[in-house]
Length: 359
Image (cartoon, rainbow, N blue to C red; front, top):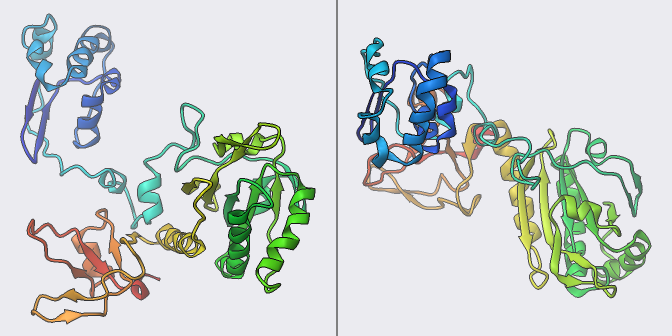
């Protein structure tokens, strides 16, 4: 077997490869980014693979051990691949593009990299969120998944009723609620207080907003902390009068497939910005359908940019980036008016498209 490494090309010669090599982080990285065919044999899995995996797990510095190992001669005896395989520069999204018939959305390109369940029980991006039943200010919710019924949803926790920051947060969320409904996004909030406490407290929330709001979304009573625990919302640093922990200020945005798309955690002393949460929902929904990603400060980004002729343009304010998965040919065909930002590397990866062209 021969392993040749260069930048930016990775060349791999192997006679036969065993899936057990994939347990090595180094080998796994190489195989993910090289378009090489693999063949497996019983003899190789029994004798060769364990030694190779051991060598790879030590990093590239340990590859010299392969030359003198007992299995080197058996590998050399087989007919090697005659042509090196040149790998593209590493991009986790490129490998999701290889068998696509159409352009993948930003959500697919990124979320395909995440498992639907974590291995340690924690809740992470891309995971299917836990289902649960509960009592709310709007009645019983037999199933969170059934309640959202294929829609987008926000699960929004607050530490406690009758507290100042939480009162303003629920009020501001109520002011934004109609906009979220128009975006086909449901809202449910939660704390460890009982539903009776929520109902009494809402009178204060509405009064603090000068009676100009209605709280039309359900507030969940999670007195036994089962939902808070399942979502990792428990704050061991704060507690109620019984000494039980309260919830942190958490935000979970869930897509129609019940996958977690975004999570935000705030300490008790910092209130959340509802405009930012609304912005996140808009950005997630846009990338859910299109092969784009939203830049920093979107939609206020790229308000004044230099053009190739030396002039400046304000036409690209609120524009979005094409993903690296979109080839130059696809970009020119689908978005002929896209703009490439000039950078010293001369790599054409900052490709702006006006939002109205992808909406």
